[in-house]
Length: 234
Ligand code: ATP
Image 1 (cartoon, rainbow, N blue to C red):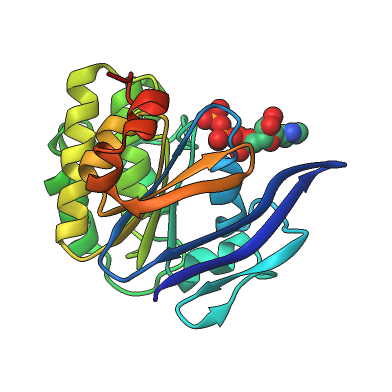
Image 2 (cartoon, helix red, strand yellow):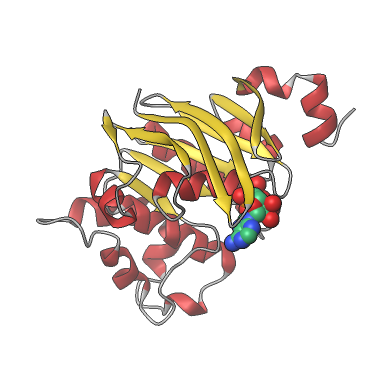
């Protein structure tokens, strides 16, 4: 197992936002966390990436307990992150944003640059444009491309479809699939449950800080309760 979240509890002040969540991600998988607004998906991801401290429980990555490791060390260890709201550097060019993604690496990064531009031809066309002037979809592509520059073992994606037009959502999901095919394990948080379940191998359903269901993604697509609650029901 590449990533194991074991019974984590996370608080915002006195409020317990995560009430004992366990998630397992095997090498090569795409795993998704789905659930309504406020269910705790983003908080779970932030706890894995080191942006939120946990109250109890642990996060094991690649055989190592990283529960107390600072976020930047986790990136160096191979946890790639493309945060919600993109987090790109608006005053820098597309190209420099990509290079920033490789800050923790020494040596030649040209293979990763080539791959980022291959996966996202739009970024190649706009390599000298300031990132802040790019469209929402382009910024999302840049955030993912930048995360890949660190050659992560696992890519953590927070709502990559947020705010994007349907055609772009489809494109982004196809690219995530391609990234996975090329060997990167993916943990994806999504509001767009339908698309996420179509893409993922396995999924966890979160409700108010707990996991209420976990199964193969295809089984959840056929699950009447999941359909009714998250897939616009029928
Ligand atoms: P969304 O899809 O709306 O982002 P989510 O499933 O990602 O939802 P979280 O953002 O993880 O949910 O929020 C989980 C709970 O923690 C919610 O009740 C939310 O109000 C609360 N919460 C999140 N961030 C903070 C914060 N900075 N301070 C206080 N409470 C917070």
